[in-house]
Image (cartoon, rainbow, N blue to C red; front, side, top):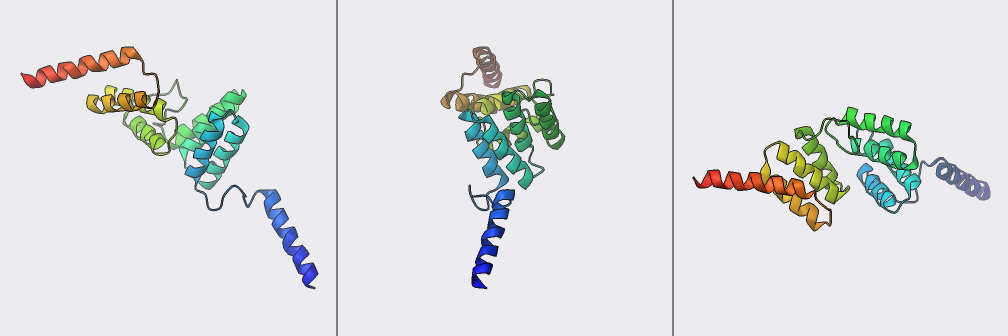
Length: 181
């Protein structure tokens, strides 16, 4: 009887593991944790593994736009452009301001700043995200915040467009001149 019960337990655990209902890569992980793992996998060139982590994140939190946006990036890297576009559209439906990978989307508005701030909070593409948020701040006339994000992006090793830096400096200098008068 005990032998049969042990076999039954082993069978149940095997089924749970096989179905993916129980993960050995960590207990009680949040959707954000899976997004971070996916980002790490993507940076290492493991796009299939990254997409899998982003799928787990989306399953845990179906309203986490970053999971869909990043899965879209991974699918784009794998060459599945149609599926990538679907993922981007899901992300935009959840968070219209999320700018991750959307060249044809409205950018640089307050919702975009919120989306970029969320990416920063999740430690996603920090240098690039700080730069994108700097641009968003610039177009929102928040020049000091833009300058702070440019410096953060540069400190993280991201190459900031020199023309943008030059234009931002000019605006900040004009603002300083106006305040001195």
